[in-house]
Image 1 (cartoon, rainbow, N blue to C red):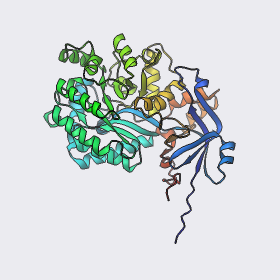
Image 2: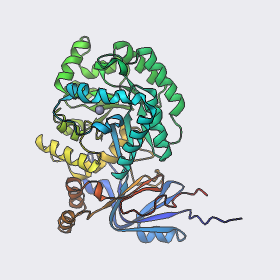
Image 3: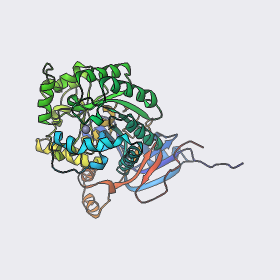
Image 4: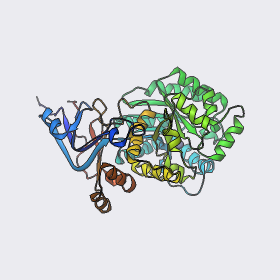
Length: 452
Ligand SMILES: [Zn+2]
């Protein structure tokens, strides 16, 4: 008989960053717990303790210790809006939203009727997320149910916590991509039965947006979500001015764009509205009152030329609107949440609002997890949370090293990362306590689980 010597507890030692409160509500220093020599203890795929390294190591004398001397250990990033089928058309030139969909997106999405192609792109997409320190995503698939099967299968194989849904779309797109109100409902329902709540997977009812769904399909989506209240709902809202005008023409009786979704029961906690750029005061108020969430996708908004998100209107109000950060790949121009934070900062600057790094890092982790109603288990370096962790090398390029040497405090260090760093800063990514990405080629599958 062979005895397997597996360590039940692993400790990651380095700077640790945990959010204790919302930096949009309290001062930055009051929002975090930061240890310059900190540690995270992991067992059974969960974070069991976070604190000063001396205390954590003394409390777990048998633990295996991995040391990250010049690094920041934080929660894995949560990307609350992305389209995995658009991975292959990221960086497509010259169009705004509606033309961009017709010219680049829809032809690409037609390819996802082929399960082998869907599987290949799903794997590429998820591996790219992990390389960028992103451990959870809320993803759109295509109208093909097989595209969702491929995505969930690939995420399950990586142990990841993700949400996704088959797009429901029954008009204003190529015939090959259209379902019907009835078929979209039935196919989505079957996918919920197959995947929702399995391992770390969640289903998101996914009508693409009001333009590509008939009233009958939005009605069916609302019915489906009501019948499965623990699923999420994701769609797009007020991204582009021509899109808004067309929506108003298609739904002349609605008070505004959000009003279309409200009419069909598609607002409320767990509703995830992508973009939400050009909103009326009534729409902002209704999002807050219904507890709906917003995915702010700044690289996409700049790249497609959609507009400037109003962070202060969304998060400066009381109560604030639930909000997180999305890459919106392939409308977005990067898989990196660091690049996404930078773009958000730049958009805010153009509106006369300076996005503090505490707020940016919070949006990219806790905020996005709140949009997905998963903040009790992911998005923070907190005891009891799943051990989904990103380890940032704070000196990943000579320039960043030089600039960081001059930093006065934690906030300047984090700001330098969000403005200058990219995937090269992600030294390691852990999912459920298992090391799934190592920039420098160290062995993967670290022994952070209790299995065996
Ligand atoms: Zn989108």
